[in-house]
Picture 1 (cartoon, rainbow, N blue to C red):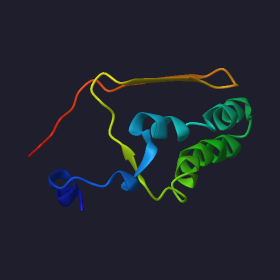
Picture 2 (cartoon, rainbow, N blue to C red):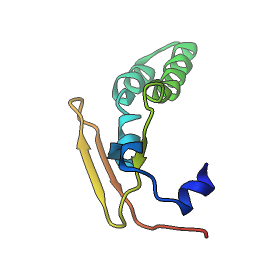
Picture 3 (cartoon, helix red, strand yellow):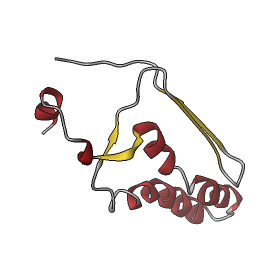
Picture 4 (cartoon, rainbow, N blue to C red):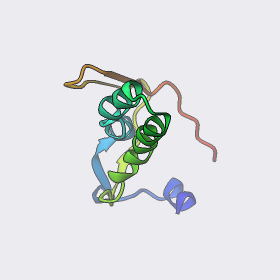
Length: 99
């Protein structure tokens, strides 16, 4: 499928209205809650459980995702500040196409 997608244009209906930069930010949405709890946990097993929950939580949003995100344009940026205060900045700095 990846080889076909590079050579044939895909219909716009195959894409969701987000770029890869935004999708990566969505995967970090629970990082403030779970990692702060891991830091404050006294028991090492609780810490590992919270870190594991953070690592697995990014896959929970992928279950409903049926469309492909747009590839970001060169120089495109995305900034986000959460209610908990963590900041996310992403920029597409290079594009490598192997044909």
